[in-house]
Image 1 (cartoon, rainbow, N blue to C red):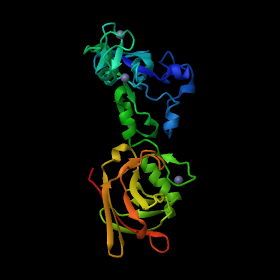
Image 2 (image 1 turned 45 degrees about the vertical axis):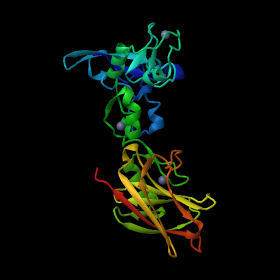
Image 3 (image 1 turned 90 degrees about the vertical axis):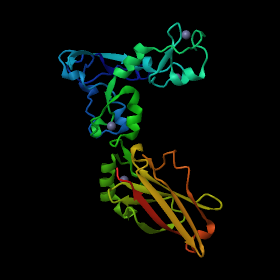
Length: 312
Ligand SMILES: [Zn+2]
Ligand SMILES: [Zn+2]
Ligand SMILES: [Zn+2]
Ligand SMILES: [Zn+2]
């Protein structure tokens, strides 16, 4: 079995990268020290993450794993990218009669090869599929405590769902990033006065300034929830809720918002979306529209908020 110490973005950075193992012939200094410590995503991008960490266990540049010989090689990741959409090719990978390859998504959209214009048929490039499937890389958040080794083609999915991925403190002017537990500790020690405690599975009465863009609620387990309040709508306020964390938190929580004004009542229920940062562009498309009449005389919104936590 051949393992790869993948060389990420050689053409983009002009720099060869390799694991910091003394056994690796390309490891020429301590500069590429893979110990990311508490490094967040930005650091992970500069410390050679997504490279195989297994090759250092063998002598020289090879080892045996389960009776199979493995060697460490470097690879230009461009060869794993679809030449049309530049996404990493996940099997099935297709090829024309001349061997030009394309990802399954682009193949489905094209009748002819982008390079030689021969018909693009159902011929698979099994050799490259095997190469892609054989590449295993550590999570880029290994420095934050993640011990997962994942298939190269699955790395982005894991990265999005990894519970060790850095999340951003929602408080304006604070640059802290950390995993969900780290963010919980940070918020408790520095910003406890900026949020409200959120008991799960029961109703909480909140009174908000109708111009306050968000209000932080702290779950019993330390997870931060943001009650987002968009007051720019001409007919009222759009209110929704997200939690701060990896995409794996999506579906873990659902919420209900209820507001009353005289004899009228509006109510809204939805799943809590997960975001890594407050200003993440992918905010939930659904929200409760609180008509202008629901805003009190003092410019305050009164809401009953309930969050239900599903048992993981
Ligand atoms: Zn493609
Ligand atoms: Zn071709
Ligand atoms: Zn991870
Ligand atoms: Zn902070």
